[in-house]
Image 1 (cartoon, one colour):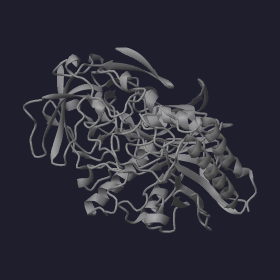
Image 2: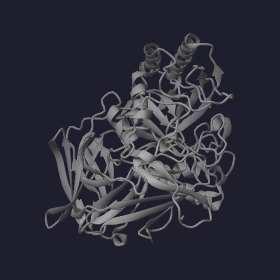
Image 3: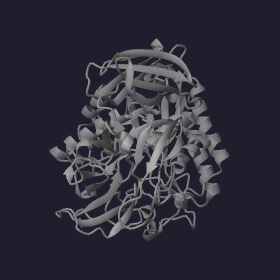
Length: 600
């Protein structure tokens, strides 16, 4: 057992070896490209950080590491033989998993490992938690199925496995089926046949798995809303059991209590935050939050969290509607961020790697990242909150040019609304993007209205890029165009602000840092780094000139190359910045500073 410091909290981490063969029998694969972190991933305890920073408890058991693995026909029952091992939480297709092989839509993936439950967890319920598994997950503990099969590749889920546990070693078996683009569900940019803007699939467990003991009556979720106008934090604690139980919420700043209030579970608790320090990308100030379930005045369950006090609204600024952060218009200059890795695919190799793209975006003077058609592990949003970057969050799309059937629509909407609930406390997220460019598009106007009703504290782009290849219902908060190479002349309307959801796409080949495929893709080839830099500066100068005419956000394609798509600021292995950082920063800052110019 070791104590591990994670951000603002400390946790007790217990790491157990997997069943079956020893670690010496397992080896990672060789990725087509290695990142600076590829060789820094531990075998037995990869990604040891507590995975849910906004609902923390001190006792937990990390189940990342080596698991037994079998790949069978989809129709097969639990295998008798387990011929492989896999390093969780890396997808079967990834080099870091040690398996590095494709999985067909006619196959299922099975995981197995043994765990011991600490004796001091006695008397508490034990939860088995999954950050994310792609896509259909069934779990057994000691041969007993834990709840229903979970469907969805991007939302977190878990089971109370208390009744299935026994003294000594317990066996967990997991079956995963992932049809990728042979199915109806959300899959983002994964394709069984990757090409161009479509990338390698992720099958199976791709975020942290962990055990956690909880009290019989415990906090399952907290909804927190910063109310700067009334100097308060509104908290709704959702409890498992004990509907009339009292909950005490305390807000602190650097260890000093600034506000406290007690209320009833599942109701609103208003915690005063006098003279609140607003959160901004330039000053990402955060408050610590503690919630305690009370029984006779004694805390029987305690969780830790944090929050930034900020608001995001649409308001008239000068002649135009603009997005305003804490009542002030800040031009949002960002980059499209796909979140893929050449060694881990959907999963960054380490926590340091996970934060690295945000660090680089800040260094380039960007104040926004659009998380494109992917949901990240919650540690990524933790770093976005702490480092200070605005986030537009896309919902992963279903298949492009293919409207899902009724069951597919039901699943897509369930996962969309679940993800919003799970990420609603993320300070950095300022805009939801339910659909993109008509991919799997249906009812974008209805869905935008539903998202806005579910979370009125943020803005909504109903279908980013609907000018090029989708349906624009005329609602939502943005007239959100995609223009390559751009930037074009997007203007606001009487009801919506103007955003350039995608532009740019300048491509540059960097020998020695290329994905092994002959076919390459970008939106405009550049001869060399000098030409690319000059072209980029010209594009950003045009963006800056559009700001006084109503443009409020611009998102460049993209943060990094991804496989055969070569239009990143960085190469896919994160080893080469294609343009001088200082010149990129100056160009980006000029666009942000253009918000100070009078409207035309």
